[in-house]
Length: 216
Figure 1: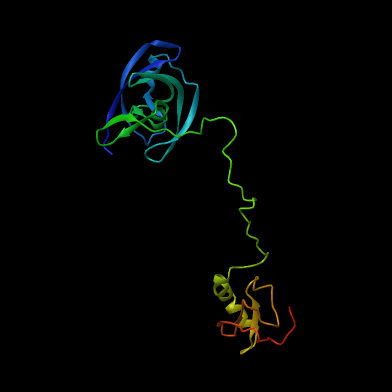
Figure 2: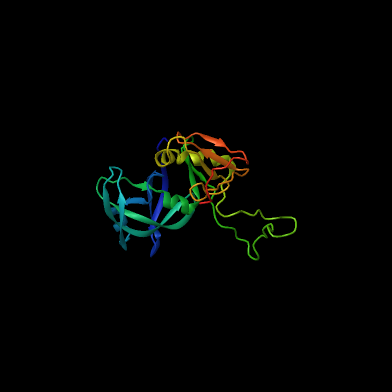
């Protein structure tokens, strides 16, 4: 974005009649507005606190801060201003711009009105939500421990290496794929059952197939 300057007027809150014109570099990357400490003291602006900032060189620094009156685009508002040291630029920062509801036009290089966001100002009962308990809506019941059939092979594949290391070669292990495969083992295959052999191969089981062992 091309740099540009904005004309402003500064004054101390306790002495608003005495205003000093300044030319500020518009910098939306700077949180606060920076003004030379000598000018602020000449306007009888006294520091009220110190604030920590990260400089453009990436260094953490502390600067005196105070509230001042600033006039932009014909409007005057209070804003937080940092006392700049020798070598610091006079900058118009994002905090002040947002307070005025102003944004930056990088092409025309000027300040423009900006769209501000906020909570709804309406009072009263919040808008009603669509009921999920009425007769027109039947909540979907979910059985504990079930997993989607589409994820069966993916889930069993996770344990293929474990199975190959536990069961002897050629053994068949039946899992009820409608449940967590780590916790359910049945001797009779069901409609959602799969088998995993010792090599990790996953196959659907036919209902008549049996593991030949009791339910685990």
